[in-house]
Image 1: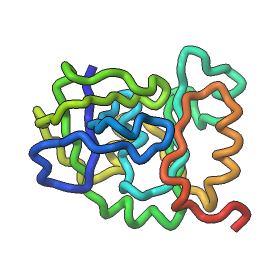
Image 2 (image 1 turned 180 degrees about the vertical axis):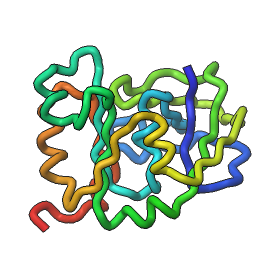
Image 3 (image 1 turned 60 degrees about the vertical axis):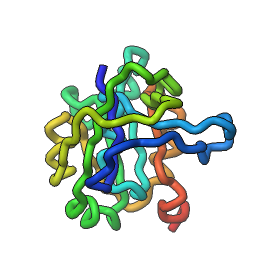
Length: 174
């Protein structure tokens, strides 16, 4: 297993634990967050880009696959709004890889791992073409007018899904 932290910052030498902003997680303990390789594509967008992401698991039904995937060779989708296309084209991301020793699983479906210890990356990978990287990983990228309809539909499927930065999405019905 490989674990990564994705950033638009090029020069992070150490990751120190931070108090989580999520209220459903213990606010008394700082954490370093990482993502597994399977869910990494969900973060190959600009940080504040709202997105609906979903991918197949062994429990994904054939009906859901036929309704929400464009082909039989696709098993992962990332949808962004039109307004984010240019920014995504022009964003460089840095993948900081971690030694997995100090990490524990925080959320299996989302691929989140956490560590209570400071982490020094073991590698840094530069990604200058996000669309190319996603296509190389066989991820379907959808560029749509509004994320909310897809968001509501995907929540009721058998996919593993993640809705990221939806507070930055256009208002529903916009």
